[in-house]
Length: 70
Image 1: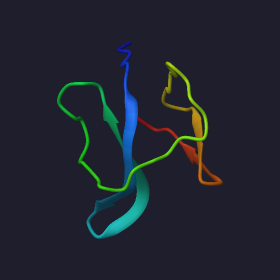
Image 2: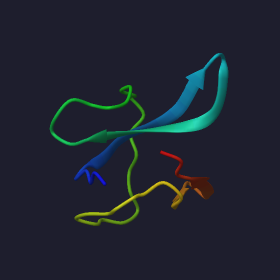
Image 3: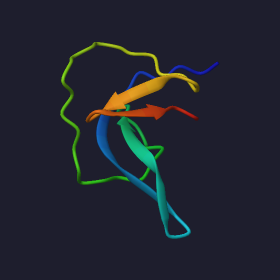
Image 4: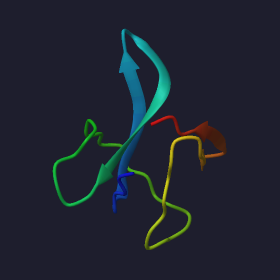
């Protein structure tokens, strides 16, 4: 298992083949970004020094519930 220490820097829609049915979250780990960079920023309503998010977990953003798949 690989664990990343990262913070969310941006959030936006993931577009593939013209479909926008998935959410893409960009993490900043003081290194190369694994995802595309978005200008839309996320202001967290809570502050945690570290938080482990694993596939199968659920993430609540702006009143919407999302399943983490990867």
